[in-house]
Length: 323
Image 1 (cartoon, rainbow, N blue to C red):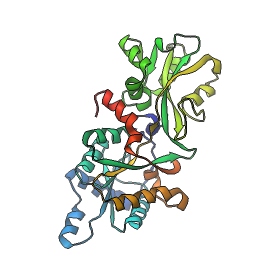
Image 2: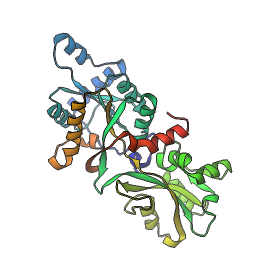
Image 3: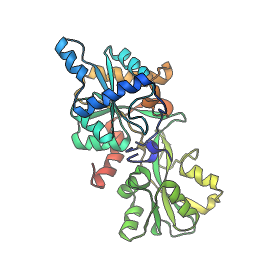
Image 4: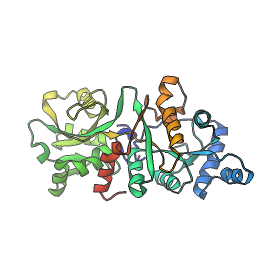
């Protein structure tokens, strides 16, 4: 199960869809400097530019992926695309985690950040000062996923023993506990079974050790509440397992949980927001190379989003005591 699509701290780690395996030495050195600057509280080049009357750079923030702490793949493409759209020099800052990224953007040390859905929701709940511009889209058109509860057709359904995913998983734990009556009642009745991962929960179900489990299915913006895609996710896994389709059913599904957005501060000039939104909207059609890191490995370009699109994720965090 992909992290950004259905995970939490690892999706909080949004989600979650990692690209960026190798980096050039020059990019690594540049990003290493950026990481130190971000941790220190502000870019030295911006301070020097202010003294010398130079243009202040536009600052983009990313979270370092495992093994990427010192560099970002496609750094040159990222800078070129955003500099061309804005007519400004661009700096790319690398944060150690989403908490540091949010702290930097809330504090005004970066202008633009790439979040997982839970990380954006937590930052938005904290300050209300961020505006989501766009989110990546899968090549197949999915804009996110839905949490689902799969139960045995001939079992007790949601009233039985239910497997719940790990603590950082949006789809298999956070969303169900916040929005699923079945999950809340199972928690109150001591019927929740802790699974180490989504695969573990699925294995418990196959072995008959639980009556149901929480999983995920991809979701497009046009999906109705009753639509489930079986191309990937839990339903595709069930089909591949050889389990008779008549042996299980979907007892509950969540609202669409969007992939994490690219977000800016609310005090950014409207004209600049429009140029950035336009860059993302045209990226796929115009062949603009934003680098694998900014596209998140989704492959289908970007779709415009609003704060309301992340309400289900914010509600999940708020219900569980977040951010």
